Length: 417
Ligand code: SAM
Image 1: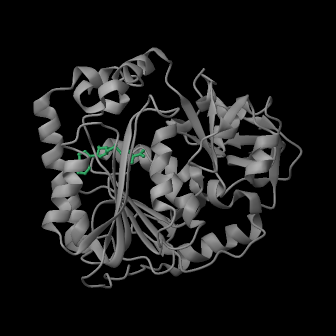
Image 2: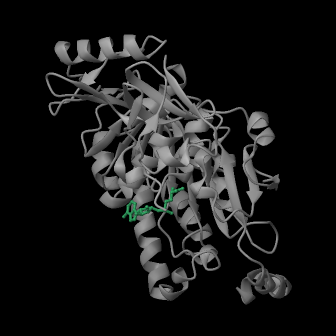
């Protein structure tokens, strides 16, 4: 770093004496930015220069706040939000976030897409894919599928298909040493080289999945040139069908955030291919059960065709959804489950469409801890399903019987004391 930064090196070193910067990004799919600012649950600092919805904050417990459970914001390191600036100008009809867990950039892309187009968020690690899926659910994204596959596997399914692919690559994490001191213990030159080789393989898979005219955004949270600038140079050398559109390296001594690297390249020639469409498996009886539930509980008509999986779960895939053909955790909005007799709504349904529920149990910020801990609530709402909200923002379902609302917040999502 000393060689690279020259006289800027002392300032770089001094930046490590400052505490890590915390950021949050408001969810425009759920709340207007100004509205959130007027009711922010803890003091917010200034706006993050490269993200309209991003703000600095210093709250230690921001992840335990009811607004966080309601998906009104995502907690993200400020520099990581810079990737959104790279993806912002891109066309986003068919988008792939290839290394997506835990979902920071997926939620940012979903916000930029505003519910239209198709977003496939993929993660190779099964446990991390599950967390990604939960974060997508809380965010209320209606157009997102979550898959769990290796980039190569996906590339066999989607040649020349996407108009935007984000490769937020696994890296040596040099930019994160302050935020995650453990990353320092994994560092070695050998690891940097191993990361670079792996990243290049991922980039190759991404390149083949991009349609002509499409854009590839590559990012890391490291300073190593092997993983950043040299990677892009090699890629452009070996892929004459790509041109560089933008490239930026963020250093902690220059900005309020950790280290990050991002580049955007356009594929100027090649093919544009269709993918095999998702064959919706319909089950008229399950669909009828959902429609009856929806009519009773929601003030809206649900758009599109309902997919019924063989295990009784039902989904609302975004229009034009291709068949992922790999392990899939989520395909648009999960509606619920039908066992042949009873329909049980899915948590995702409350998170995506709960504002349209006919019966809402509105709680103040102070009163919703009991619901978030999984407790039953007393209510004067009539019998049946209702959506429990913090103020007007949905948190999940409850089922009322004679004045008692049984808690249906999934166990794994509850607040632990
Ligand atoms: N984009 C995420 C976000 O904003 O929250 C962070 C992604 S993280 C930097 C990189 C991800 O790549 C990790 O979740 C990791 O499991 C995954 N990964 C690891 N090895 C991979 C590989 N060979 N191919 C694709 N992804 C891989």
